[in-house]
Amino acid sequence: MSTLQGKTLFITGASRGIGLSIALRAARDGANIIVAAKTAEAHPKLPGTIYTAAEEIEKAGGRALPCVVDVREEAQVFEAVGRAVETFGGIDVLINNASAIHLTGTLYTPMKRFDLMHQINTRGTFLCSQAALPHLLKAPNPHVLNISPPLNMDPRWFAGHVAYTMAKYGMSMCVLGMAREFADEGVAVNALWPKTAIATSAVQNLLGGDDSIRGCRTAEIMADAAHAILTRPARSYTGHFAIDEDVLRETGVTDFEKYAVTPGAELLPDYFL
Image (cartoon, rainbow, N blue to C red):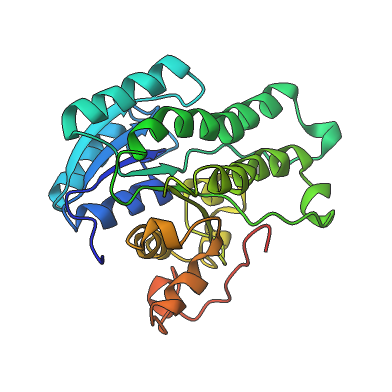
């Protein structure tokens, strides 16, 4: 299988960034996309809403269902999953992309921020998986893909931002456990993480602005890697902590300069690698 045509993807945080790029790549195949995100009205510092994302998806060749979803809210998640099934007849793919970031040490992390990261990253991923899995179990080639890093207990990945690392690793632990839990039922559960920094609003606003963006790759590399994973047979590819560049190299891609924001610039390695 090399296409997502006719498949239904439920993507959290799909109004912008990596989530939207994954949605647009699937839309070019003719996929159905549930745009599950909080932004119903334009934000002064962040691009896009669920409605502008839906418009882009449909222009790219897909069908879109914009849903206002705060992944911290159980009722909103289950309502959106229900609407997805009612509209498109089922769910084939869940992308747990929604995430919160706050890179501070222990003494400088307000508990409000700690709670936000854990509620969105770890709890939100678990909740969306729980809501979608009954429908994924009925799909012919079901995939769950979490945008989260490989698990590595080296203290250097914790020391500078222990709260954030715990929250992101919670998403990865969902992969570790659910891949084994649902292996016999044929549901693939994998993680995908970028080798380099990706040009997103988080990098622009939190991690160095335009100087950092110049050393990034575009989100299209994550979208192409996600597509390569989601078109694999679910029963034979599960429990992996994949890196975007490695996935694409396996498919024969050798030119990665096309993904550079600034061709020739020195690339910034991503956190956790």
